[in-house]
Length: 202
Ligand code: GDP
Image (cartoon, rainbow, N blue to C red; front, top):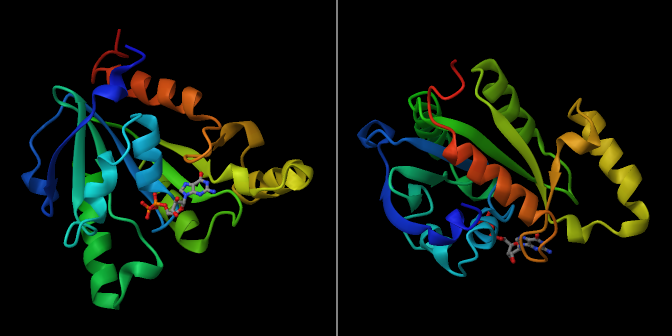
């Protein structure tokens, strides 16, 4: 099972969350544009170019679906932030994401990515607050940890954790391009995908 993500294939892209068929389980990835979402998907699946589909013209604002196994999905949600353009686009983005996030009983967790070096931005905090308000489980992932100088790391990560009101160890610190933390995160994602809807009910 540990190699499950390696079998991931691009399935399809969708603009209408309500058109998505039920899955057995899914894990969604969300974060600001440029946070390294495609790089992380590629790295977790050990499949260079897998998530490049999300960069194709016309696809950057779509929900892209990858399947490591039948009806077990990785969901690449469009990035938020500087690439969003007008208010109108932002509203459409928010409506689509919110519609997706509130309509998937099989959603096991949201991987909420931020840049470790920059720290969480206002939109990252907003997204987290929104997830909390909707009682949706999420995993905080600080990407680009390789860019934080080792000498400053402890103080820097402590500051970030404090701003998020969590412990440093509650955040998964990873580097999509340099490999740090990927093995552990891969394991966590596989466990989430393998968890069936009613498995926790005795
Ligand atoms: P996306 O817009 O969130 O899908 O971001 P990309 O995966 O395209 O990454 C944006 C840029 O950040 C690219 O130049 C990546 O090579 C770079 N990048 C992604 N992850 C990391 C990382 O962990 N460390 C460093 N140093 N660069 C990264």
